[in-house]
Amino acid sequence: MILCVGEILADLIGKSENGNLAYDRRAGGAPFNVACGVRRFGAESAFVGSVGDDLIGRFLCDFAASHVDRAHVRVDGRRNTTLAFVELDAEGDRSFCFYRKNTADACLPPVPKRLLARADIVHIGSLMLSEKRGLQYAENLAKTAHGAEKLVSFDVNYREDIFPDRGAAAALYKRMLEAADIVKLSEEEYGVFGRDYVAEALFEKLVCVTLGAKGCTWRYRGESRTLPTLPVKPVDTTGAGDAFYAGALSKLGSLRRSDWTRERLDEVFAFANACGALATQARGAIDALPSLQEVEAALRG
Image (tube, rainbow, N blue to C red; front, side, top):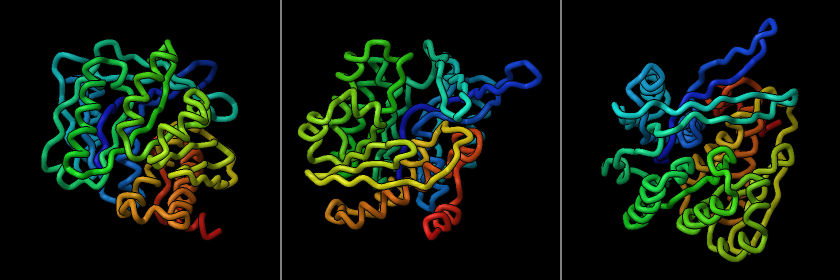
């Protein structure tokens, strides 16, 4: 089972209608997207997060109950649910603006022992790192997961409007990158940390770097491979990286470290590439997730 912990929020995706900008409400939040994708791609998933006691929070609770195998979402009566406004350009690339001053995403409930016991991988979201209590929560969870002999996953998912000081943000992220066993970065994020840091400080980690239309690169113990992705024309890239990572974790959850051979990792990340590419063919992060059958058919050509 893949246990995902972190933000669950509403993506408000802008679109122009008759000269006006309207927003579609969609469930989102990177680790929640991953949890939904893991289930969609044939593996067992669980999610732990927090929402406010409001209209959006109730929508998200209902959505989580029907889209992950085991949802543990706390309703926080003192904080509102986090919102992310998303706007798309002509190529389907997105930009974000977050509404999250004293919102629920960084005040998370303890992970139930029963969920931790079932987990093969504990995947930790990054939005919480912008708050001191969230950073402490993430570090303590990684330590607890390792104590229970679970693999820890971390996705950088850097957002400039959450961390306006890139250097300070990188220092926080490094604490989690070095605590994790499996990490994901975008090509831009890879540039922030640098080739030498990834090669040296993350040598023992399984690192995957998403390259957009160029596919991905995986790195593990000095070996590196770049794999192409499916040729598609994107409609909306929101959540494509989460779909990619959900595909990767859905396959890695059934493997031991000793199974991380070149051949097996090539299979894992070819599958992940297809998940990410197909997820750009419709609007929204979760609504656009392809089925397992669609991914397998695309890989067969």
